Image 1 (cartoon, rainbow, N blue to C red):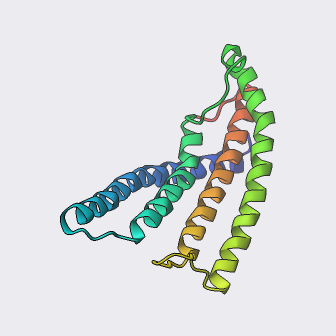
Image 2 (cartoon, rainbow, N blue to C red):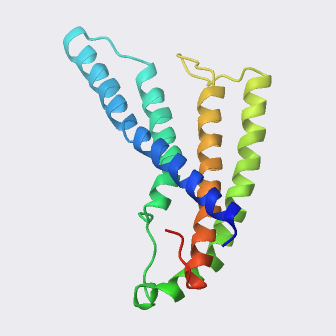
Length: 170
């Protein structure tokens, strides 16, 4: 493989690994927020309006930012009828072909994310609830998560091509 491709794979994998490990802790933050809400309702009778939306925002950030890490660790769900029976080279060829569908989807999703984030920033878009939070921070995180997933898909494609050629990237 060309040197720039190997360098790209190493940098993208390192970046997504670190960000994915950090994203894991968002579940603890979400759990703490939900616990705070439960305790405030139980002991003080005070409902917290922002908790549901904040937990939704955190869960969205968790699975979109952590998606690239899951792809890197080969932890995404796939329907395995014939795939598991293939040898490593044929699996790599299959992955290299099918990843184009994922890349196409992510490019479209990223374009929509950029447009939506730009709109949220330009018009100071807010959610129509009592709490009324601005939406650009979560839309920015979601768009960044899609971009990281796109980079990881390209990295996976390069690694699959290398495996199919018999020269895996270590």
